[in-house]
Image 1 (cartoon, rainbow, N blue to C red):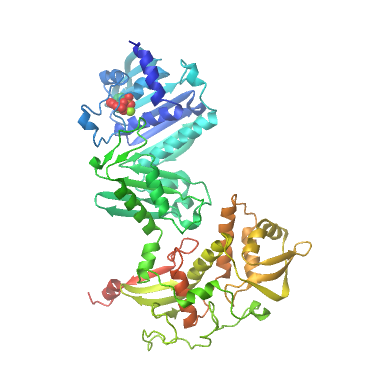
Image 2 (tube, rainbow, N blue to C red; image 1 turned 90 degrees about the horizontal axis):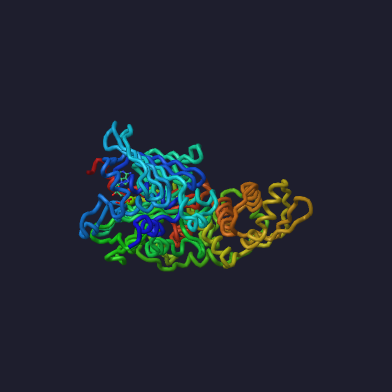
Length: 583
Ligand code: ADP
Ligand code: MG
């Protein structure tokens, strides 16, 4: 038989790879002990010192000595306890393994006051004695692998060990938002996370408020499965580091099937090759999941995986707004209507330079030839929802413009308002992204080229994005110095002011250094869409409203504009009836 210290060292190979795995085991023990606050101290990336203190239940002297024996666990007694086990630990080998390859010091106390201190060197108990401390446990692991040179050799540099530690702490902090966590690195505070009620608050503390605010809520229940969390807006995907966090019944795990299901929900909302940031909590009945399939407990097995994945996909899909928004349009499925084709086709009649001048209110079609030109303003009071016999658009509701800013229509569930600028912006953004993905954008040659004098920053921004501008339908030449000659422009609508659009877009791109081509495309598409879209205050003819409505309905994310704001607002009948005292 092997001496037990050697057996522990062999076991340590499975449990302890590097400082981060020690940190993980110690934090899990603290959480299992019911800690509400955990302080982590790291020196030299954890290679020199790892110290984890908690305010959990602590241990008696006997339990403290037992805890460093192999297969000493207080968490399960029989094999049947394994089914649906809720604690992180249950194998009883982490402390034994860690103490066999380090110098470990444990101070612990089940009550404020008299506690126990135990010192272990490479698996040998050196010292046991009394100490005074508050309720809880502090474990300090020094000189990890000091007696295992083969393992020591595999440790990476301080910086990369530190990053792995931070990753572990971050994951635990997302799993258990209720626990206060601090991390000190080489004497300096590195992370200070107060206990919070919500995932969004915790994400704000870890990654910053701006990051957290942009994410969309997921909340989906199906049978005994509950999926909740936060996911990235499609328009943001690919613009910054991708992060994925997944927990099942309060345990952080990896699961490709669930991640793929969540990603499937983004189908058609993001281009291929980019992947969304996801933070998802899955809760299933305890007997529907087996957590004991992986030594580091990083994977689980579901009894009905398909059902879980379906719920994830549906929840994420709903969060992205597609189902909600299309439900608001009152139709389960989309039937092509004639207006749609017009958006994608070249304008039927060329538009001359006069279209470049700021124009008074025009009634010619924004999205279609001006067959409805000069339509009088709609009389809100006397108008009835009557489908226009001229046009086969029975599937478009009767639309009214309010405040020259919103389009309003009636729906089974209430009155719906669409912000015309946001809506048009969403339509153009998706059109531009489509063009950048290989489609064609109709361009309009100008009768007289337009000369644009730019500042040095704007000129530089143009050079950086030149190729993308060209693909969007701009034909632009350098003219020496910082002057551009614009020969052709895309024509999203006759009121489009290309000079203003170009100037404002370039101004907002100065100093911008998006790393990936995709991020640059999205930024540019979003900026041009914003500048090119119709504005609040533009009067729309009924035909223009219908065209905008159908174009919006056909976008992948009608309910969100490119900044993630709502495009559509619904006033439910309930609410209206309540206000009139009808219920
Ligand atoms: P496991 O977590 O699988 O039970 P460990 O080796 O990690 O095994 O821990 C052994 C035992 O030591 C635990 O079952 C628990 O009773 C005790 N223990 C470890 N850390 C703590 C702690 N921070 N507070 C209270 N008890 C602890
Ligand atoms: Mg443990």
